[in-house]
Length: 464
Image 1 (cartoon, rainbow, N blue to C red):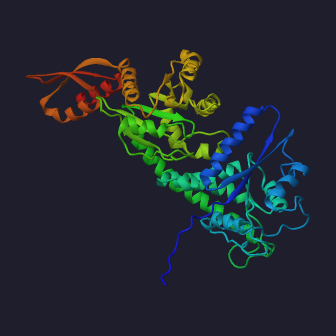
Image 2: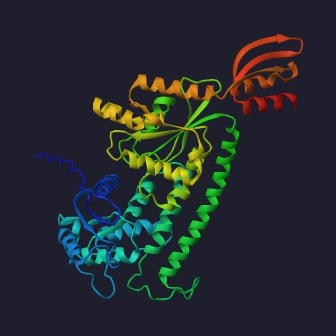
Image 3: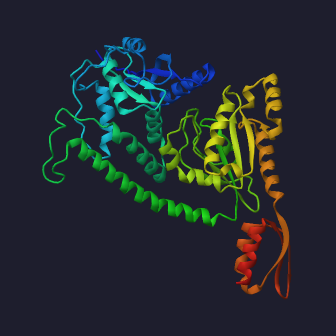
């Protein structure tokens, strides 16, 4: 009798969120932070099944939570709820797999695999605890020992998402540096970790040797990144006379949707956090003369790890060197004002707040008329534009707004290109709009409209 096989969808690991509401954080902000953390965790591939929160003046030094809440958390994960004394034991297979992945590229050794404890993944209990704060390695270790589950903090989740989504070589190098900086202090001693190494590195404990390998790897990655960034700087220098628009904003606000609609490019558009990690530059379509370049940038988020902010220098440089910033906001999100402030704060830190900007209140198609009117009253003084990236009429109007912005900075001048320098005509048509063209004995006479800097550069080229 023939047999049939059916495919079974893989079971997603279960996770519990942990949040401590500190002084100065109100209930709405605290709830928003946990909701955002839940979306980050789902993007990483976990299903959130519970949330444990507590009001405290500060994170508990030992294990983040107080004794009562720690026991409540452990009841969910199957742990004992207390931090045992003595050396930590190896935890679940999930913990071992996580550690192995983070040591592999650094050249370290994973000596934590084993079946010492019951595999929680088969028990139906959460195997991951995610803390909505940046915690120390000792706090993470104590939480693991009390709960029997893998522990990640907010920074670890974001670093992992970046690591999975990076596509270009530059983004992969930047993320790997941030990831190794995060992993290094969290590496654990194995049961034989006190042993000394023989041969090269003699006198070092295994954990010290692995950390040195990570430092060497980070140095190697930084050298590769410097070379790539020099190439990026050269390309940006070649575009310095061109008109540039940068889309900036919170993650998942709709920047990539605008990028696709404005330029016709097939950039990745997904309804999840950090779908875009690479800077993409395309020409505005329908194309104008001179061309207007549009760049899509990585999204910002609350408590973005400093290493990642610093590592994405190219994305921030696109914003700093742009002629116009388009702040994209998900107007349907009740916390959009706080998200906008996060974006402005980061750009303020690099000096990009001085760049002219326009506020785009996206996803207007999800709002009713009363909500739209409230937004107009709240942001009207900022010259905000209420629109949807999926509305062709809105995109056409935004296209005209961008073109009109640059038109106000343009001037008209006459250029004469000798017949011996006709090769420059292509550069003229690329850098400015030719309003009129005529010919006489001296050469080609052009009436052009463009930015003063671009026209000055063309004059220098003609006179050279």
